[in-house]
Amino acid sequence: MTQPEGHHLAEFNLGILKYDWDDPRVQDFVDGLDLVNNAAMRSPGFVWMMDGETMEREQNDPHGPLGGDPRTASTLSVWKDVASLEHFVWNTVHKRFYDRKHEWYDMGAVLRLVMWWVPIGHRPDMVEAMERFRRLDAHGPSDQAFGWDHVKDAQLWKAKACG
Image (cartoon, rainbow, N blue to C red):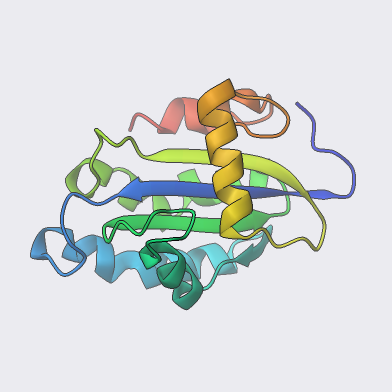
């Protein structure tokens, strides 16, 4: 799959924490959010991220697209291209937190990621993100909703995702 001209890459990841946000067992995760998010915003190719206040409101809204689970931990962002996102995920401080995901996330709920192309300047909302997430879940990868394995140029995830 090739990036369409005039488009950026949107990504949405959705996880459910094993414990409440104020539980000491997820304290390292909670304490690291600003560090990881700031690293993302300083990364080459970063375009936009849903701010923390809006994300918290989306995650806690019982009538919203995420269903209001108080243990939801998600990110919605836009990147210049796959290489930029891939570098951030696997070659920055983010990787240290990714490697500890089993400590913090309910892996029965499976930590999930969906990516899709957005026109330059577009900022997806949570309704759009969940539509893409559900499309990938129901129909598998396509040009409208995909994971790392659907992007030919993405290689770092193959070597580093299991680390």
